[in-house]
Amino acid sequence: MEKRLWFVDNLRVLLTVLVVLHHIAVTYSGMGLWYYTEEPTSGAVALWLTVFLLVNQAWFMGAFFLLSGYFTPASYDRKGPRAFLRDRLIRLGIPLLAFYFMLNPILYVGSHTSYLHSIGSGPLWFVLALLVFDGSYVAFRHFTGNRRLRGSGALTYRAVIGFVVALVTYALRIVAPMGTWVPVIDFPTSTYLPQYVSFFVLGIVAYRRDWLSTITPRMGRVGLGLAIGATLVFLPLALVLGADAWVGHGTLSSLFYALWDSTFAVGLVLALVTFFRRRFNTQGSLGRYLSRHAFTVYVIHAFVVIAAARALSVLEVPTLAKFVIAAVVVLPVCFLLAGPVRRLPGVRAVL
Image 1: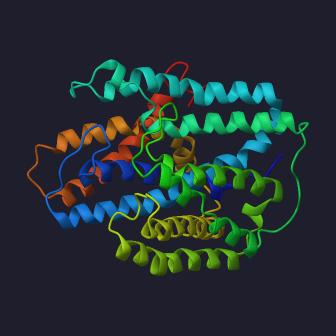
Image 2: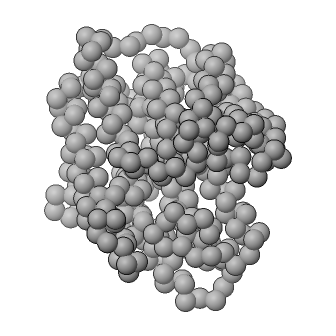
């Protein structure tokens, strides 16, 4: 029996919390792209929330894909291709279908949006992507004769730097700038697809080579240095050369922005993995509850965020105050509701 990596569970909880905070910030940032939004009361708050969203977007979903990729080979090896796919279709496919055709339209109630225009994956685009990635992994194992990719090499600096300097993200943003909606894929941020694929694959390799357990504290410090260095060098260059550097279009500013968010993502994930392994590699009853219910929170949080935002809309207070109040209320409510939701008949088998 493999040793439980409590620090990975705890890191996944943090990422789930950031997802909830991310969508609260979207609600009040004035950027749109959410079911219910309000215009910020000041430009300074709008800027602060936008920075928070861009920094989050640079790395946190990539980290989710890394952790998902890490646990994929063990599940496949243990169950075999058919049982693995069946499990994925149940655990991921059923919530996705329910959200796509039932829950997502409910979130549009009151917006005068037709049913056909309201169906979609919404926040569960991540689940849709995981289904595609898992299916691709099964196909890869099949066409390679079900050969396991083992190996025991350490995560070298050269490997990290080689991953960082990949410019696929920059190239994609030339033809599909930020905000481009890609039919069928249904991703809100398809320009990060190269990062998501790379992190998922990196997670698979990390499992075979036991990187999450063997990354040295020094490598974590190097990662933190990469993240800080990229923020001090690439990000200012990107913003000085173009205020919309994150959009794309093949500009020089978008090149520096792509270098920033790729480097920042790799560096911060390295730093957090080593930090959580050293500081948060145990769980008490609260920690176990949070980790068990993290996926349920991911599925239901949009309802809580929207309900809280609509309730707070009657208050004549600054946007920043609303954001703080919403965060303080929504996060515990999401986790408290997750327990009863999982106890509903048939739900525990899925969530």
